[in-house]
Image (cartoon, rainbow, N blue to C red; front, side, top):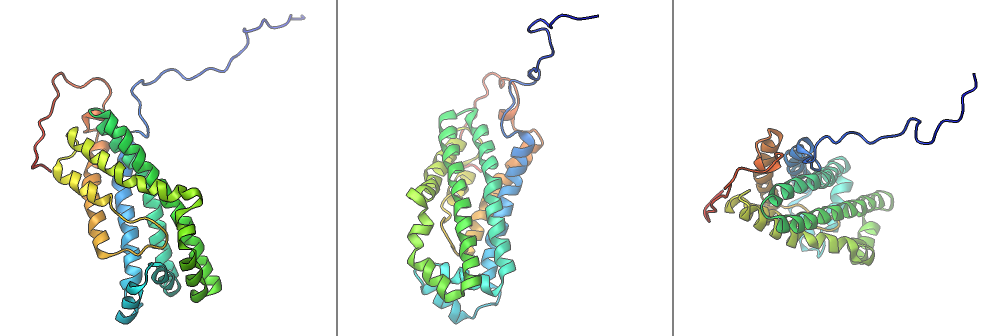
Length: 270
């Protein structure tokens, strides 16, 4: 039996999924909480390995003093790579991985803060995330310089990097260095927002500000003070990440908070 043409609109259509949750947020509790825990730890591990590459006995005190007299840290980093490429590669890889993990971590922190002070959270979080993306540009230049040292030798690679440091470090149109500079204002705004919202006390906000002063650029050396600086960031973000994973952060729960949910702020607070 011959059937006529199918009427327009009566066939099977593609449809959107049903509306599941109007209060869903990005990147979500599991990803955001895990990033808050892992991000600062992985970045600290990268800093520690980079510090260890120079101070694990591969160089004499005289060589370390000569590195310290150089205007840039590039010669020390290239020498460390040639002396122990596996350790240096691991340090720089963990540092880059830490930057990748920290952007959803700071996005989650900004989401928590935004529940009470949205303007500071949006600006601060956006600027901090932009600065983290600049770290990936620096990581690419670092890797290129290491391969140059391996193929062309220390002297040629060191001379080239130091002669062209500004051009390769700042990036085209200075996009990378400008994005990295967003770190300072972004961390300040986010720290103020974290205090105003009651997310962190003054102590943790000061530690967050301290961590926001970490250097950026190409072939930078890690120092002992940097380990304390980012160890402090672990104290700030990791406990928050655990609370997020356990769904203990009221600002991330769906629905309005209880009436009169206003917190008292104390200057002397953790």
